[in-house]
Amino acid sequence: MIGCGYLGAVHAACMAGLGHDVVGVDVDEGKVAALQSAAAPFYEPGLNELLADIQAGGTSGGATSGSLRFTTDLGQIAGARAHFVCVGTPQRRGENAADLRYVDAAFASAAAHLAPGDLIIGKSTVPVGTARRLAEDLHRTAPEARLVWNPEFLREGHAVTDTLHPDRLVYGIPDDPDRDATAAVLDEIYAAPLAGGSARLITDYPTAELVKTAANSFLATKISFINAMAELCEAAGADVTELADAIGLDDRIGRKFLNAGLGFGGGCLPKDIRAFMARAGELGADQALTFLREVDAINMRRRIRMVELAREVCDGSFLGQKIAVLGAAFKPESDDVRDSPALNVAAQIQLQGGNVVVTDPKALANAEHRFPDLQYEEDLETALTGADAVLLLTEWTQFTGLDPEATGALVRTRRILDGRNVLTPATWRAAGWTYRALGRP
Ligand code: UDX
Image 1 (cartoon, rainbow, N blue to C red):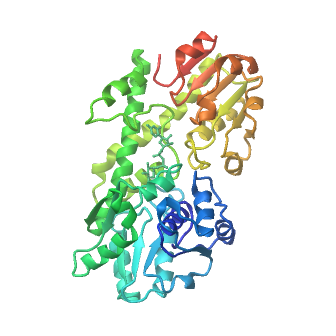
Image 2 (cartoon, rainbow, N blue to C red; image 1 turned 135 degrees about the vertical axis):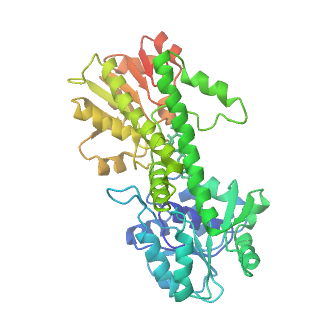
């Protein structure tokens, strides 16, 4: 496993859990040491348990675990039959396009250690066309190695389950005489998920790359569609949650990813749709994706609208008011704060003079690192005490399960803004709260 960030660490642990012998390589010594002692440098439910189980020679998922070790020495990949590249492709500074420097460096340095017949398997999310270019480079540096593009669809917070039980496995392999033999090695690696019913599709390189970006674009579009409907509901006095339930019952539409609210954030959807637009431009097909600009714009407007709504509820000004922000992570069951809508809203309100206190069960350390000027409080009750308004911005169960009466006894003014449409308005209103949400009357 080359690159042991979010994707690589989870994939390494899961593959070892399936019985393979895995070596994970990363340039970051701290990360390597943490993973080696079964303490991942990020929060992902079940991951540390899986790492510890493998190290104890465990039997996760029924199979006897393989071995797993982490190192900073890339030379240790020699002797492996399959080399997964799992490095990041962040958004380039000041641009929409993806930064491919880590992918390029990983392939270039791995090439020297590849033996004839080895597979090198790209998992990173890349602009379409990258695999073909990397294959041409490999043709010069490691001519007998074979490149596969095998995108990853895991969700943060469900990464272990998603890796062990993916909906589908996509193998991007060129249509040449080696195709079946190459697919057979992957089938051996993924034997357990395949036996468990995961679908398997073999495509060419560009299609495999596009499966990932198209899927993420569709998900982002679905969220922004319902958030656009929320804007309309606000204008018309309708309720977007009832609308989503009703249209979601049409199984051609489906209820999943129709939760209106503060919109999407995180390390994937926002950057992936932007990189996709940039790539379409390079390919002369930018018109095909102009709608994604609108998807992005709708998403960003929700954050601004949330701040407006909060200010309205606070009688037009945040000055002298304590605002309790519940949530820092971009979504629950994660400590990831990359492009977090919650922190974006918290920072805007602070800029407008609010006395903002942010609380989150897992993400405060990361939040503090990114937004050092915000005020943080680990204890939920302390964060709520004396608040003039409560903003629920990440739907952790600790927050969605709050009792209106008990919470009401802590705050100064009973005002709640439900940024994720997860509370029952009637219950809160019955307890004397001013309840407001995006897209609900
Ligand atoms: C996403 C894709 O789901 C995953 O398949 C891909 O591999 C990586 O990107 P992830 O970023 O972990 O995964 O989070 P996801 O669960 O998709 O949520 C993304 C954002 O959308 C979150 O901020 C979430 O709060 C928001 N969201 C999701 C909504 O606002 N409404 C919804 O209905 C669903």
